[in-house]
Image 1: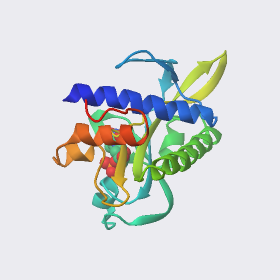
Image 2: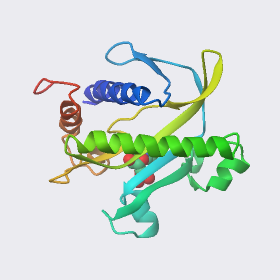
Image 3: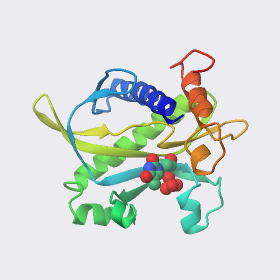
Length: 204
Ligand code: TMP
């Protein structure tokens, strides 16, 4: 049931973006309109996926042979060039600057800083409900707020864009249930929404 997943992601992302707004991280979200739609500020999307990792898994382990589950000594930020034709390749900070995907080093430092603050906030939020934030993906855009150019957090933050493991059982509560064919994806997303206090009912 992909419909149910979209509705849950919409609610979870709204909850997170509202909380981030409250700690001074500017986001594109203006408000959620209904079950499936949000009103957002128009942004020119920066063609870089910012991946933040706390625990090694996924492509990091595949690429470098780091043992799955290795706890990183500090958050690791990676950049992927958003380009389907080339398979969203991993790139260096130098590529991001050379090809002007971000205007200059100051802006990139600012985005890196946002990534770390968002990581701190989300780690605490999820830890408080018994979930480990393993890694996640962020996108940013250039937008205009009250006549001022701002870098805004864009896209979404949801179990589709994060890896979330139960603290005790290490059960995956994210899109890896789909990627690894583990089943019960809707139940997992509902579990995340329930723990965050976003939904209260026992099922759909
Ligand atoms: P990865 O280990 O496959 O590189 O994924 C790292 C994190 O980024 C994981 O939480 C999933 C998320 N992600 C996306 O949201 N979209 C993407 O296109 C990719 C590659 C990863």
